[in-house]
Image 1: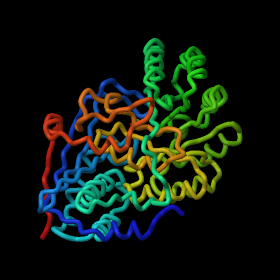
Image 2: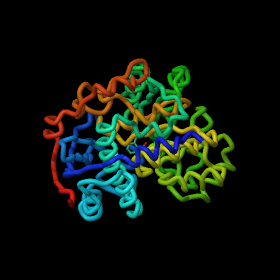
Image 3: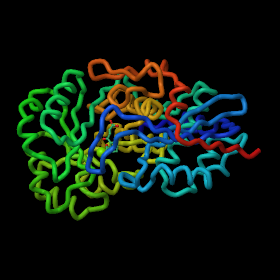
Image 4: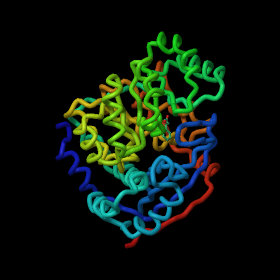
Length: 387
Ligand code: OSB
Ligand code: MG
């Protein structure tokens, strides 16, 4: 057991004050269009939560669900509605974090939304108390540098793929992850194969649930050609397909993403004998506190676990990187430096990578740039706390 319950309780009992929260919807142009089994994305829409205390401390959180319901059932418009209607009444001028979390716990689901509000509240408390919520994992010695990988979209031209792969190897990313779907041109992979196999990098594939029971032959190509884990090959909940695929493709190793929203989902898949790895997205499981439980479960059961991304802005990525530092055995996380995603992030200096590693201590120098947030803001709502 790596959870330090006394440190966790101390954190939960901290005083949480609030004057107002602002919901800031931003739309930040991406450097490049990204195509996956889910859809095509040209810009990163995100909902930022700015929590302001009566003494003027500002805490930030990021809701990283998509603007459409194609990755999870939450989408940005719906998150705003949820907060206005059901989180707003929970905001008090003064309460403990535990009291606030108890109120949020009554809202079922809505993990990305609740995680964003939780992150803002935690950020306020960390600034006021000097404590870190991750002290709850004091049984684990955190890394000072975290290995990161790159997640590459589906390519429609081989030359673009060749250049991107060469560039990613040159930039020394620790892992190269490729989005795939049953429509993926396997010829591209046949051609790139010698480069990938000699790159010395971890190779993985992410299907975002796009393969079905009739696509196992296609999946077999990726399983048998590369010693690679396949992320979320099938649509969540298809236990029948999972069991059949595991039987027919003995070398298939599965990493779950979309399918794990709660520790219960993780336990079910683990007990079913179909789970090999976990891509933990803190937003997807409802926030840092739930992530701590999942990290602890994975550690106790020797399940490889690493942190995934949703193309977060610097606000969400900083928190994810800090959590990643508590997974010392992970080979790489989907948390690339700022310049992988955006011409301009909303933090300065940018989150940087050196030889495939991001320096965690350096993150404390990254400050939010209000002018950048303003520049990308498309909608803003302010909700006052009840006294
Ligand atoms: O499935 O991991 C995924 C981005 C948006 C939605 C789903 C996924 C992703 C990524 C991006 O793969 C990884 C990153 O943020 O670098
Ligand atoms: Mg994924």
